[in-house]
Length: 207
Image (cartoon, rainbow, N blue to C red; front, side, top):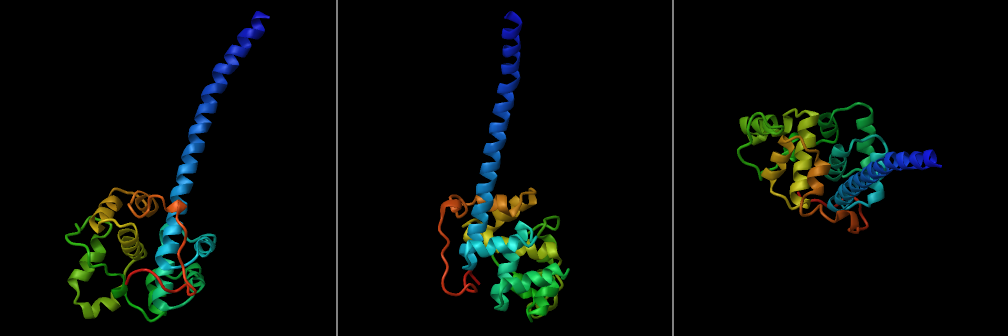
């Protein structure tokens, strides 16, 4: 009897910490999922598309940070997001997709930023804009990382109601755009916000 009692005490001591750890992991996963859903809803609201369409694009192996690029280009080129995704999945760079639809790198410039250091993730792109006259911006070849950073900068700053410099600093600190947006004024509570969209799914977003 005494041995049985000791065995039960030992088992309880082992199981309780494990249960607490699993509870913490579950809570962490739940919080992370809410942040991601808020990001997807934010994209839907900003680009005036239903959340389901955002999820369809994501399910086609488009990374979260690249989702805004798909809808930004679809909006500017006045095509369905699926047309952008098809070209991306063929291996085309974001710049080549931009040119494919008759657009240029001038569409990615965001004029609410001043004094970006050269070591910043934004340093190369803003240096290129500064070094070339505006009439040459269209032909500037931007890298995939530059385009992802610039499109998300516009999206998070405008829809997240966050100062552009703060977005850049957060990015310099290694934070993903999903994390930055979820902590912004516009991003908080977005997991509960309804998606606002009209009859056309190509409107939306500030230009």
